[in-house]
Image 1 (cartoon, rainbow, N blue to C red):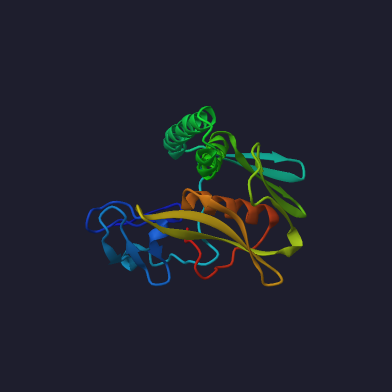
Image 2 (cartoon, rainbow, N blue to C red):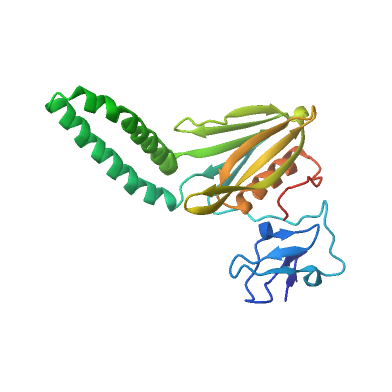
Length: 238
């Protein structure tokens, strides 16, 4: 059974009655997959007959780790990076770098220079993990939207992906799901992409933790810059 409120459709799994994430619904075929029990089903009967998809995609609520700061002539969207996984990474970082400190102390004390050389790669990995942990605790991404441009920056710790795009170059924004296959299973992240007027695709931001984050960024930028929301193949539904 589905619910329909304020123009928004919520699809529920007929097997376990849990709500199905929007990212797990293919609007083109109306096939949905429940993340709770892995049931795959046709959800077309759960949409009101009057519902339409296209430009009317509904409103995405602001995630808790986002802040909107309007000012004359611009809008600033601030996304805080911190999430619980950073805490787990912190313990790994302490263990790894603590071990490397003992390793290098022993190599220097015993004058085993080959030992120190061998550990240099592992030491570099430890420093990289430390940098990622610090960024996870303190970094924020800033999307500054002005009438003629869009600027993305990450600070206080510099990170890849900082850029400025002219409004005239932006044709369309869309969000997509990225599936990662690793030795511990499958994980998902989300990104916001930009289609430019010269036919290029630019990744605006990646590594987002939820579809809501990606769709909210897309929504607010398009709304401020008055970019018409046109369906793009492979984009996240909302």
